[in-house]
Amino acid sequence: MLFRARGISRGCATGRLLVSPAPISFLSGVNPETGTVVERGHPLEGQSIAGTVLAFGHGKGSTVGSYVLYALKRNGKAPAAIINTRADPIIAVGAIIGDIPMVDQPEIALDRLKPGTLVRVNGTEGIVEYEGDLLPGPSA
Image (tube, rainbow, N blue to C red; front, side, top):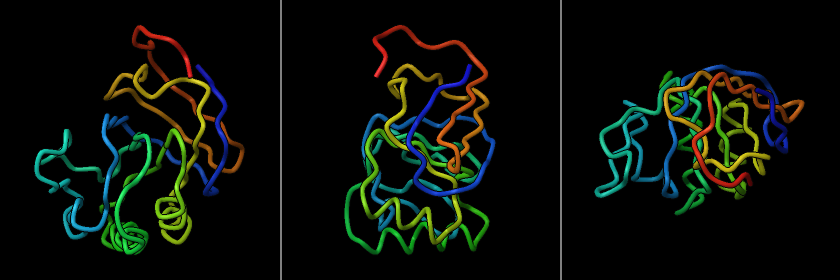
């Protein structure tokens, strides 16, 4: 299944989908050395974002989060791509400087996407290829 989104950071990448129902803070919320979510109480606490297509509503926290995304990329622990409901400047800048493909405003609500599904994000064209069934619910 193909669906459209708004391209934020150019490039294409494929990975298994990791969906967060909560915003993510990259500064102090994700370990830049391991790619593990370390924020206490976060729904993804203890999980690695490395190599995933990371889908979450939006970021939160300090502007330094952009540089944490860049550090994740340099350490080989960044997500392969990012899908946001609504991109904020912190995440967008981090994706751009880290050369991580990113889209936002997808035609399909993130809570309809099944974690673990193989996904290809084309940030240049604003297209997401989703190789699975959607979860029940309304579309975006």
